Image (cartoon, rainbow, N blue to C red; front, side, top):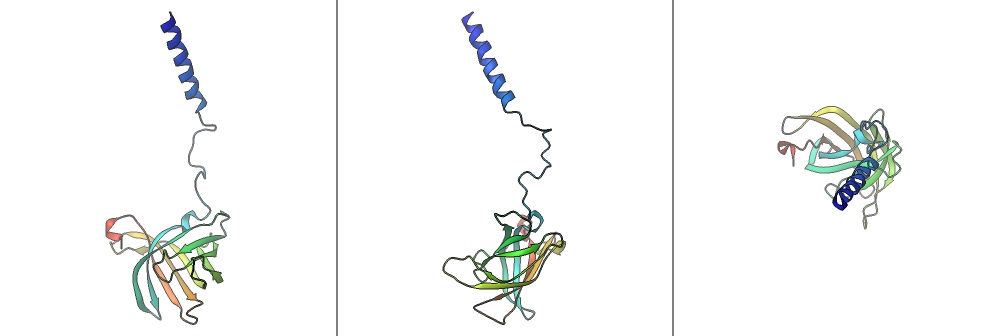
Length: 167
């Protein structure tokens, strides 16, 4: 009898744990859970850098991502120490997928510069990768305070994850 009572209590506790873990709502995960306000503009990008139409740097990886404000009005652009060593928060127009800003303070420790970003845009499906795949395109002009007057054109495609597109 004691074994039956212990088994019953065990099943009761286990069943209670299962019921207490039930989520509220209909269980649909299509809501905005985990999404950020810059989702379609965020990611890793393989870009080249040009000055006056002449390529000055081969493919490098940069990253765009949401700010902690998560307000859909700004994003980070981080070159991951690959181009000029900059990381700036730039204003965006999320609907138009454009971005620009003047005098943007870089947040790279030990390298105090500002950056002007102009003509920034992301084009959905606007690029063909080096491996021949379709991806989003990114392009913008950058002018760095420690090289005033030189406009760097940074453009490329969103990382696909396919080996043939990696650099």
